[in-house]
Image (cartoon, rainbow, N blue to C red; front, side):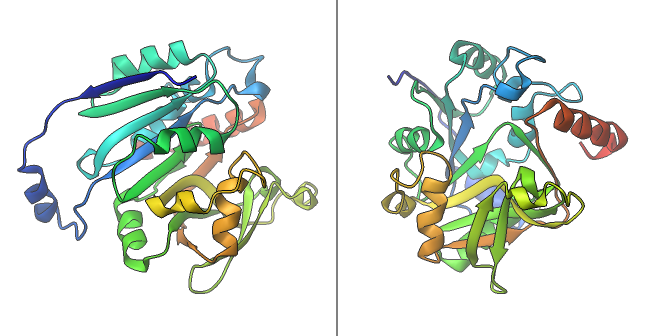
Length: 268
């Protein structure tokens, strides 16, 4: 079942000149799909809230994603809700000030299905899709968008270098930034937690033709979206080496992120 809430306010035509003043080369706006349906199953002893509303350093996880975005580059925000959607809807209604947003409440599980449903309400040529239960400090969204529009491939995946690779999607990247393969949470690194390499950080920009590649027979998760594009060599990787990334899924990961943020509060 899909339930939609559409809120839209007209904006002035003067917005486009503002981009030129700021030095942006690309001024076409894009829609954003924000994935907010996670339960936070491994955090259930810590909170009953949707995972995206779990607070670290007095700030909801979803805010760490929203704060990366430049509103002048955005057309519509599309929130994909699932677990405790009424709680997320209330938070969105009280906190989102963007001119236009849509709420999609999807009961079925699976990122792929949520993305497909939300895609129907997008209009722009490029679409940002991101998880909202992760922290990415230092990611330059505007620069990533310029990178995406320069290479002309279907998708751009943001990455950074992390240790504890068994927690992440490990990437094999060609010298020209083409993504050659990915492995989700490779177990062989559980006993080698200090080894570092490039990982996906759950922040991707797609040309809308990506919908032609997805394959639910492979997976109803991110792999059903990513793997067909990898096979076609249609994903470029934006290497954000200075990004501090936390995939917050367990109490231990919450503690690690909290300590880091407390020690680096000036950067958040």
